Image 1 (cartoon, rainbow over the protein chains, first blue to last red):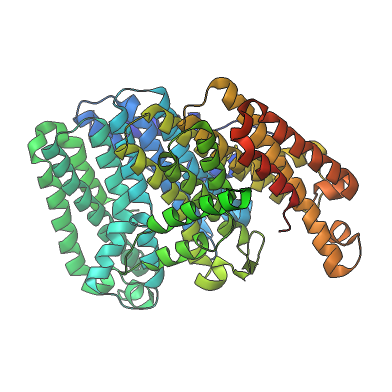
Image 2: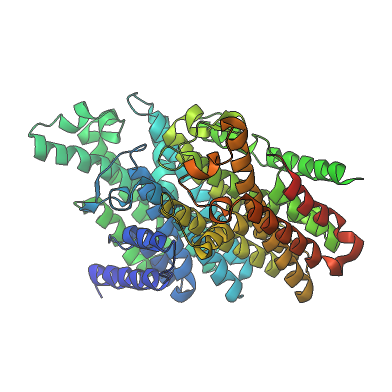
Length: 296
Length: 296
């Protein structure tokens, strides 16, 4: 199976599981499920849960045992997008080509749908942990790592720094902190929680930590480069994304050329970190190249 | 110690713990902690965590062992108030006599502070569970019960029904479902999670389930009665709250007299449910009377 086939296989596994986890109900209040499902099933490559499953496969773990935690991370990711898109936040009307949650269900419902997805993530993990009592300690540790990654010291902190950085130029240090938290934390979470669940040795965990950190960095730099490139396409001038943007990015701070260099460095670091795993790490290595070469 | 002294003692225990759990940080993004703390420490009787501690005391459990879960429920309660107060929801400027979270920190930060408190609740419980490995299964079960109570089948469902019931008259059945979820779920959660953590027998659990259900109901009916009574005070006419309100309540559905009867019934049911616990249940019994007689 080549990289794309393997990626598709894992994406499908995640989509099937996410679909299964939905509550089915048509009584009063059941619209919350429609709103949750609308955003959760809106597509995407499922990068985060796929990472968790790929790490599990590499370590010889049982993917069925990782799936609930992987899907919980996707729920957390989805809730953060719903709230990010709200008028009081980024005020976006579209995501992945379809209207954002609040455009379809209204702002109040979108707030609650986000809350419900965040809560559902924990409910799902806790139910599975209660009903499958092998490696209980590892399961609790994985959940704690996910909670730390998602919260006020992780992703949410990144969102706050992002909020506070609008219309001001930030230092490289602050930019790095922002991305480490906002994007990085929820890329590290699936890699490392899966490592814990699958009983990774300490040295393996450390290698995966470096991999996940570098992959998250590459992901963000590539995002920043794509932003300016799409501005060039649309506006026909190279400075479009830079000059008009009120946000600090790797491109506004370093320029496109230097940003491309930093992207290469991050991808190399991700690939090198996996050396000790040999052939088994091929998919995760190609994942780093995928992140570098993607167009959207 | 009389009821009020005991209540104050437990409230203080909760406040001290909540204060201890705060992250201390002054780097970029640390405003999130200020926003979280602002609402979390805004006062109140801490009814929910106090219930958890009181149940623990009655069952002879260790209150230190229940405290993190009790405080997590208070965090969940607080996040729900922050989001409820948002312009897109109830659009309230004041709560407990001080400006609401979004009035002080802005809407975007208030959304994130709510998210962060919900997430922090789980982080806190999971950290404690990981570091204190007695009765692991009970701890996981308690967390799952809390997650179910807070989510799309519990509190959030109630919020959605509430949202959908604006400006329409709902059936008694829907009103009861709304309150069972919106208020009841987060009153049941501390009582029953504490019972699980303290190893309650099945029959004790069942009695506490009835107590918590009745207490939650009494709480809501009393709220509805106070709403109309404050309208009378302010507007000088008995129909004020009823006629002007666009929401269905026990008072709009049954009238004040019948609502008072239902309140008495609920309080009696709560008190009766505790018969089997003898004197040890005195505090919880008086709690039901406190809910009935409170003025705000």
